[in-house]
Length: 326
Ligand code: FAQ
Image 1 (cartoon, rainbow, N blue to C red):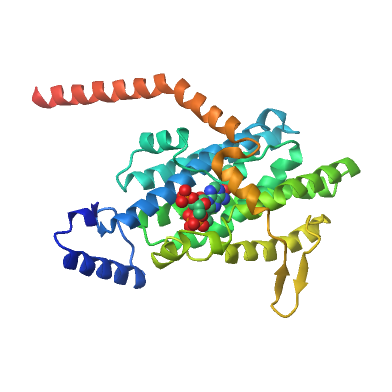
Image 2 (image 1 turned 90 degrees about the horizontal axis):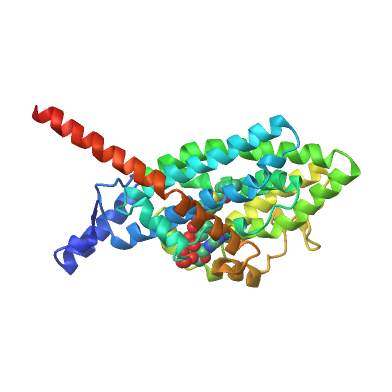
């Protein structure tokens, strides 16, 4: 991969940047070996890396319920879903590696808090209905945000998103299925479903990022086709899609100001508490410390596996060299 740091002069650099933007405007894919501006590369590493970390940390709240799932079938489904999230993390780390950053480096940045992961995974899963709410709302929001990313200008990220989106759609269906069972079940189950919606609604709206006025990266990322919509636009689309689903479940969105706006043909709704959002992304959410501690433990305890794999790879390479020389 070649970047602007190799550019011989300012004029030459400008010409390359204009040609690069023209390729993006024409809908061409940028591939790892192509020249790219250093800021484009850094923006992609930031977004893909954070996205990968979100998939990996995102296993923890649901992992909490694997050994407490109500039936063997639900347990098998949840296990498969959590494994899918690990797979998504791996595709995304591979996509980031094509930009010249190793998975170990990205992990180091997560563990020493130089890189973020999605705010949503800093909230606890207190009941089985939370697993339904995560599938329905969190995967629903993830899909809303990620479907456009299948058209991302950077080829490896766009291609990773195709498979991820297919799997996330299944995840959302299984979450909604849990919600149907709970919402149409006993009074106690209905109360659990409503409580899960009450606790996950605003944190889910926060997943789309800060309001447009506070979004520092949107404008440039949209110009580069690393993003396609503003944070507020996607948030609005998500609300419009989700309110009828809550109606179908017979659950109430916890927003006293939620109203259908006949003129604009969309819902008016209340903003999340942005003070809470900024506190969570700075490390002060309900579960930030617990989540990072779990990832640090996994990294430390996995050291012998990484060492063993490396030793095996070195031994195999040495054997191949010997065989070639013989
Ligand atoms: N949480 O200027 P913007 C999933 C940060 S995957 C934490 O608007 P941008 C699957 C942002 O990084 C969910 N931080 O930023 C699953 C920036 O900080 P920085 C993850 C956030 O990049 C389901 C600052 O605020 N999805 O759920 C958040 O243009 C179930 C300013 O923000 C992706 O990563 C946040 N919510 O837009 C797994 C999708 N929002 O980096 C398990 C790809 C913003 O300067 C179970 N990413 N920040 O220090 C994106 O589309 C974008 O990066 C946004 C943010 C939309 C997340």
